[in-house]
Length: 228
Length: 228
DNA sequence: ATTACTATCTCACGAGTAC
DNA sequence: TGTACTCGTGAGATAGTAA
Image (cartoon, rainbow over all chains, first blue to last red; front, side, top):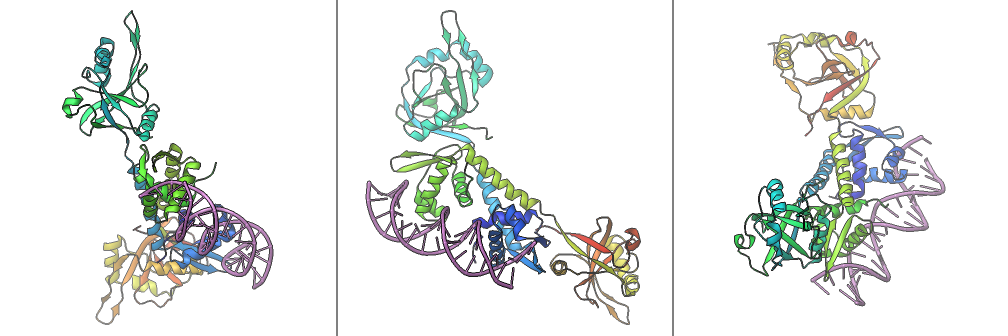
């Protein structure tokens, strides 16, 4: 039994939307050709083959044909439609980044504990992060590319501030799951001393201890994406 | 801007279901080829062209590639999926038959008024039909074909009975709308003196009067179908 | 093991046309 | 008007193979 050819799918869809599921509908090869943006000849051949393979039935009245879609044709269309639909729906709505823990600069603890930040963290994230950030080195290109595309997604914005002496840049937080277990957030900084190959993670707990990690350990973060 | 080629749709669907919407996923042309039931070379070409036309992005790491679907690719897939979906959903769920009124045999009135029938009509249809049936001559092949396919659908069964002298056959009713206005039913008889080119209609009212029809008038019946 | 080139083949499409 | 031949062209697919 020959499979429904891909190029016939749109033709069948066109017939379907003309109501050819239960009733015979009059269709000329010329009009059908126009609908599927192909020639009259192509439409004719499509109908011929669809009929041969049992996806449609035709009845001639004079020179014209009326076409009806068979149960087989309908089933096949439903199958393909559901394949597409499920492939669209099954796409996970998170961005995953993987890398290895590196020791941080030690500065993280100092900055993250500043009142100008902690107040906002509490307000917008719901918790004050454990002092210090976990620094992760991204090795694979695909993940640093993913890191870059994060910028196009909305995160939680922690505004910069000034303490009179100097100003501190904003911090953008992308809440996510670390190693599939610990809740935390990936943060990007307005003023970072790192390049794109290093990401920083925060959490309300000590991630290293909570997930039993040490320097060099592989780590994964999954950041949920609002699928648009 | 080149359109997404039909033969690339399933390839894109495959990538999508591998989770390539947001993340780069490692894909070899061999495995992809198997998934889409094409050769390794075909898969390679698909990726090449999908990349060229901006539907996917690829990142090389060593000999392997990781693939991600672009927003454009996702949009395009959603478009096609919705075309298919809507064509499947928009199919009307009725069977339409058209023909012209012919004068009946006059017998209809007699049979339809028999208690063995009327009792069941009242019970199963909710009303006792106006005495006599309206006979409609089907001219076009497509409608007599439709009439034939009615047999495969479930109708309301009015059982046959015996009055001691003789037996009367069953009547199968397919409730429907006559000329888009009058509720009635198309009936098929176990013992009919007509061939498939004549259908009989009943209603709780006098259809001819209600729809202002006379012999020869064109008439249409729409019988709702349980879409399976 | 990979990807993707070059050949070759098949088949989808459209032009022309018969009926 | 209609459908559907034949035929030429060129995509799309595969085999073989290079890298």
